[in-house]
View 1 (cartoon, one colour):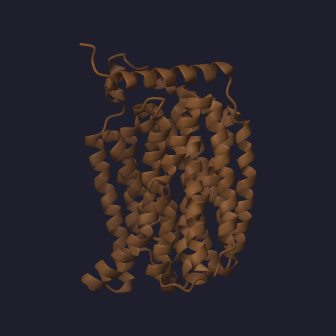
View 2 (tube, one colour):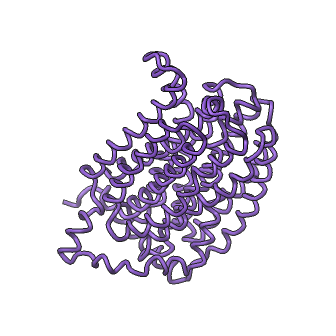
View 3 (cartoon, helix red, strand yellow):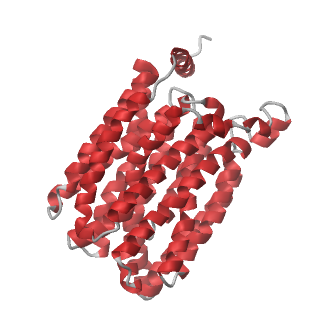
Length: 431
């Protein structure tokens, strides 16, 4: 449970810092005289490097374990977060936004760590909850960063706006650095201990046994189907985190703080929505096996696409926009939870590589979607409509994720065994 709580909290901070600049973009845009095209490149840049970072970190988790991976990612990733506070123009801001994207790989470590720590009958719920509570950082940052800037640094300490948003980013980076140190001392790689001593004792295969696992994952077409599917849910979430505050500020005539609160309605649904996606994945998995998990994934993603198209039609009517945004957020995050209720069953021998590739799909989707928003904000509702149509179409790819009969049988046996052990723990002792 220490791994559970440390992994979601670390991911929360990474997400908070990753998108910390987004709700402050109105001030940054005014100070640096950024054009719509430049803002679009900042949106794309913030999620592009994460594609490659997630591919690498999944393989690295298989090799050295999640504890060391998270420690170094948090420590090194904190540097560009703080570096944003020293940006003086578009070029330096873009460089730091590119570098910050690496901390988005934290998601893969979180999913890997909970996958190895929890049994098959609850792994979907565990994965979805740690990821959902981590993604919550994208919602909290929408109102917390404007508050930190305007109330703490500008109001209480008397900083100018110029230094207010910079100090806010430096503070976010410092917290990430400290959490990296804590992760090293408070967690372990597996329920039995850390990878290095377990390998030395012969309880686990040597590190070189992971050679070839990435290529094995790449050869499985189901992995690439889930890559695209995750781009249609998590990629959409990343895009909304980047554009929501500016969308509400410009298209609903709000100030920075109020727009941040409106945008936060999307991210705050992660408190429970992604967990629901994983929970229902476990429920349908218990009733209908791996096929049930896949059918649930299709249904959630299909509903997400319809809800996004509905949200696109609410411009100017805030009383309709917020409820539509909440419904859209619900299905987006349930789709993410549903995806990673399937991932642990694709190939257990290369779990890290599978999680890394699928996770990278989320950022690849965000990069692709970002090109729709390299325009004036008045066109963004049309971009939402197009994006919703794409998501709806992608949902049908879920039917390509199929499992062999022996895989279904093995998953059913593991599920029943885990559930039986849990029931046995709850029953009173015969003595």
